[in-house]
Length: 223
Image (cartoon, rainbow, N blue to C red; front, side, top):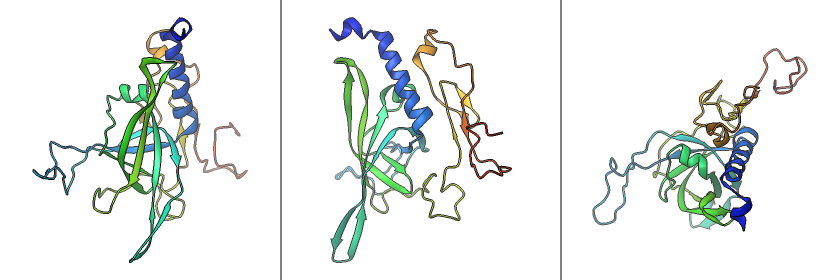
């Protein structure tokens, strides 16, 4: 019965609405590192690459379920170990031509994670061809598995790092570009000509150097 009421047009609407929440409201993101198996020196027997080669990181907006660190005690003392869940928007992955794979890596804050599980979270109203998104479980990567500098934001405790705190946020709203450059964002109803692109441009939250009221954003048009 779902197909009688949930047609491709409704599927596109649901996809665009969830994209709007993830990309234009929440603002959470991870940086995805794809392992290049063709360039990494993989062991013939163990099929492991001690030194891995990665593509340049891809910034992806997603829902992130941040879990408290697990404290493990061994003979060397205490160790903090992180596990997080990340939910990628399915249409966004298709638009980017990106396949999320077990064994790839991503960073969130100043921590790098190895993907240990990547499964389809659910389908849309029982329609098997339309999935809602991919749920990824990331386990904190061991030292030496990936030697890359983390991308910001990381932590406000890094006072000497200009990118440690994200002070600006720019919406995408289906535009191919915003003030930060190329977005790789698509909204299906706009692509199909069912909706015109928004009249107003993507809104932006950014610090104001001349702000005398102590308000650190221009989103509300205080001027």
